Image (tube, rainbow, N blue to C red; front, side):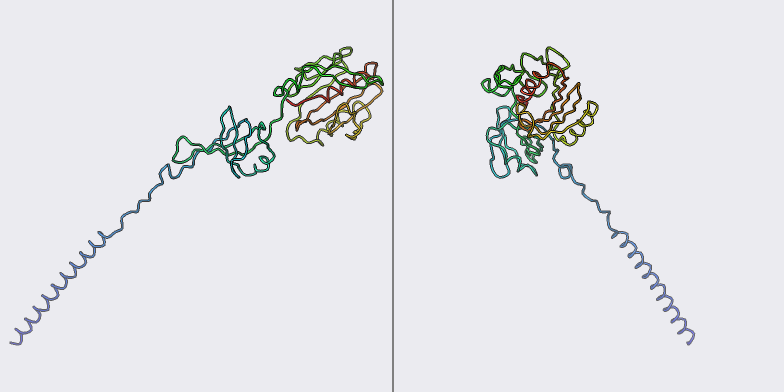
Length: 295
């Protein structure tokens, strides 16, 4: 009887063990499936569309026109080819615009950018603007006639001589019958002796006067004694000058002169041998220099 009881207990224990093992196995399988099914899906990042990432294309252009005036504190109006347009003022352009008057001819640089959402509209922004110098061609005939009379000192006497309008590279001036003008070479030459001449050139924007002076002194050392004149002591027939450097010897005088007219600077180089024509050459050449107009 005792053996039968023991057998029954072992049978129950064995059955319980098998049942527990089955339940544990089933539980592990469920957890494995749950872990597999709950793995996070890869995250896909949305790439920006071209319209979101691309900035409007900016184009830089140049223009010329007539300044009309301020439309408001940050907008100006300019007439270009007969049509008025509004331009925004870029950084640093306020002072240049403040110096302009209605009707001034201006040259300017500006950017042109597309406006998002409007394929036809453009945002125009000025980055640089300046007043254009009035040229000889722009002046009415009554302001710049074909001929003009000048009073000058010749051999100690005041005389009136008639000058004829001539045009060179970026300028116009009056010349007298004693000279011929080579426009291609920008050279004014005395008829009686070609060794008496005046060379003319327009200096670039931003040039340094000290550099011109240094070059002139170096060039004129080959002539002889070099002297820099006080602009106040320069012959009045030339008008106001910025610089005059002279090289002299007993045979030759050479001069380098810088003169500014309406914001444009010109460089003159005078070659004047010592001789009989000297007395007439100087006053006539200086008067021609004094008549120059930027073009």
